Length: 365
Image (tube, rainbow, N blue to C red):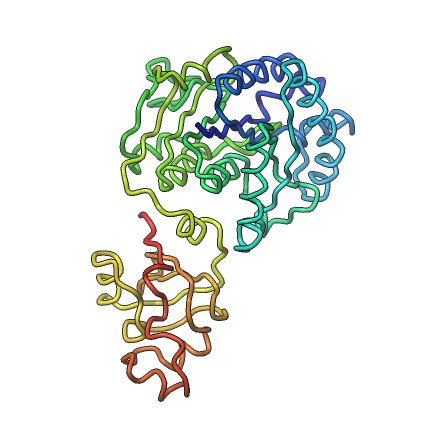
C-alpha cells in the first residue's frame, strides 16, 4: 500500500522552534507503518516555523521574501531532525522540494513521479515540502494540504492521511460549541459538508480544516480515500491502516480518473478559456463528447496549441478543462464553424476536434 502522510506546522512547531518530542513520536508511528511493508511518503510543513526561531521572529512572516528567508534557514534543521529520528529505526529518508510548476509541465510531472517511485523502490521514505525559497505566488500550492493531495494523485497513492491538531471534521467548531460532534465518515462531499469548515490561519501554518477538506475533495476525484486524524495521539496511523474508525474518513464515490486526466485537471495550468454554447455543454457533460468548433462562442486569453484551457459557459462557470489542438488565434477564426469548414478557414486542418475527449476532463461542481 502506498501512503501519503501529511504533517502540518502546528504539530511540529513550538516556542523553541521545532518540537522534537512531537516529531519523534510521529516518526515512531510512521516507521512502524513502514515496517509493516507499506510504502510511505511524508509531506511535511515546518521549515518556516523552524527558521523563525533561528531568525528570532515572534510572528510568522507575511511577505514572500521573509518567508523564503525563514524557509531557507529552517529547511536544513527540519531535514536533519527527520534524518536523525528515522535513523533510530534504520529508515532511510530523502529530501524532495517541489514547486507548483513541477506539476504544470508534463515532462517535469512524469520525472517527479518517476523519482518518487524509484525512491520507494529503494525502500526510502521521501520527505516532501514546497520549495519555499524559490516559489513565488503564481507557482505556489497555497499550502501543504494541497501539495499532499497532488502528490497522492501523482504517485497513484492508496490513501492520503492528513495529520491535524484536531480529531477530524466536526459538525461545528468544538472549541466554541460543546455540542459539536465528530463526523466519522463522509461518503458524499457536499457543499454543506465543505461549509462546516472555515478558512483559518495560524502563527505557524497557513492551513486549517477548510484547506484539508478542499484537499480531500481533490484527492477523492483521483479515487483515493482520505483520513483526517489527530497527529497528537500515538498509534492512530496504524489504526487507520487496520481499518479502524479514527477521525474523519472521506470515501471516494465517483469513477477514478486516469493519471493523465488527473494531470490535466489538477496539474496543468490553464492559459485561457473557451466559451461554449448549450449544445456543446450538453455534449461534453452528458454525452462525453469532444469539443467541436461549432459549439464555441468566443475565446478568452492567449494560448497555443497543446496548452490547457477551461471550457466555460456564457456565465463564466468552469465546466471542463482540456488540452487544445488549436491556438486562441486559430479558434477565433473557426469558432461556430462545422468541422468540414476548418481547412477553408485556416488553410489546414490539424484536427476535427478543438479538444478531443481523451484530453478533456469534466470538472465537478
